[in-house]
Image 1 (cartoon, rainbow, N blue to C red):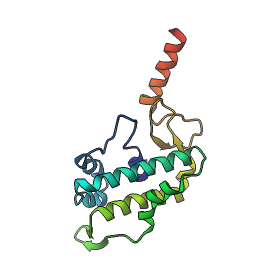
Image 2: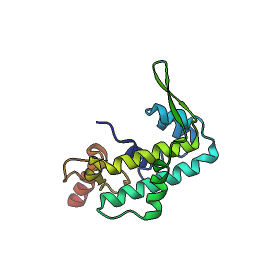
Image 3: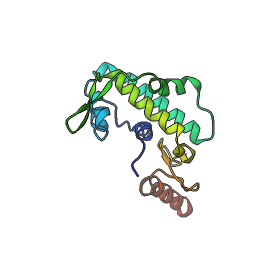
Length: 170
């Protein structure tokens, strides 16, 4: 199953050192798998990126708190979800082969990302939200298994196993 957009957005900062959307070009590249979001991101200017990054950080904090069973801070919850609760700044119209957008740009990007978080929080997967326990990892993930500890067993899980082995034998 594909990762929900809200989690994918939050996980663009997987550690203090790694930010997959640190530039406008990287954000646009990251958005490509979501065609509507990609069309809206194409209209962004570099001065819009700080708002996108602030909302990403708020989204990540909200999801981390929920994964910990704690209420998220109201200001961050509002920043992350507010645009998704407002009327969309674009219209969807019929077009050959499907639909097209009228009115893309920064407001539409904020709406789509905020709406993705709202939909996630109100859905069943929110109950299965977990935070990776890998050292330095900031990712969140959905798991039906309550004992799952890492976002990716091959990366964070392997690091933890190697560190445990080194502690036992070092």
